[in-house]
Image 1 (cartoon, rainbow, N blue to C red):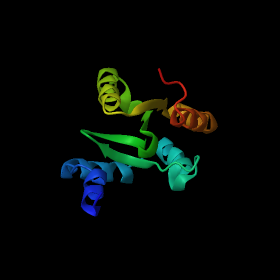
Image 2 (cartoon, rainbow, N blue to C red):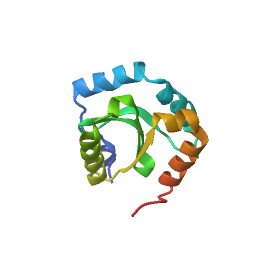
Image 3 (tube, one colour):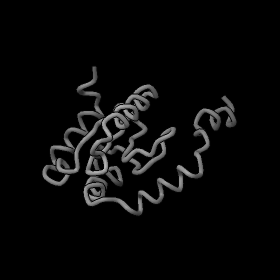
Image 4 (cartoon, one colour):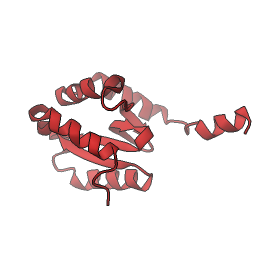
Length: 130
């Protein structure tokens, strides 16, 4: 395999500039639960897994993603009230594209970060998959 072939295989599709700007804005305007969870996920603190936050995946900006295990972690707070259909559509899209999706509430993060981290570890190991 040539260097060019390796580059093509590892290249990401181009990201819509509007989505990229949105993801940057969301990172700057993160909520308290997002910041708390990020403080535990950043710098490979959880099982040496590399997470990204507010990352563009297709047509969506996901809260957290670990590409190496194809895991998306979504925080559901007040902005998700009444968004069940949209959240389900988003989860279906992510699953169709090879991601596992773990949804946790802001209250879960604030009130039980250790349990949330354990759930993320289990999801990353593939536990609970159908």
